[in-house]
Length: 226
Image (cartoon, rainbow, N blue to C red; front, side, top):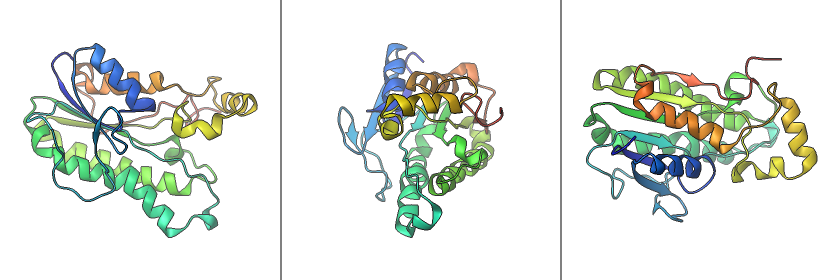
């Protein structure tokens, strides 16, 4: 990763922050953005834009990490809530990808990492809005991987299960909840930011130079094991 230009959207907390620290330690040149702007450049991906301030001329890696957790029965999810989930998880990624496309094409071997969720492959009650938004991410991942392959741009996504981040704090707010979450995963525990960040680091690296169009199911076995 030494000397690579990596653009990280959502790099100030959770998985994004963990990944930023790991990439910095490996010598990457980081360009960090988030809605809050805390320790990063301010970028609200739910607003329309055509350019992102401060981008390098050549982008070797792009990670879009913003996400949501809005677990409700389907009949209680309003259209505006569906729209909000799409704006943050899917359309925000589209806006960023379009703004970064020219710089990605200037790299000799660029990598894009997006984020899905285990709830796309594994049907889960109360996950309708987030599963729909992240399902769109998985479709986008495969389509862009095909379209951008001639430009040597790899596009992959990670589909985690529950991970101990600030976004998931309400789901892990007590010992009982944490123990119940551990038991739901065949491997016996929920995820950590480091688990997911290491996978993202791999996808950004030259070690993954032959991997594109893939959804990496990093979920403690939840999507395939019983």
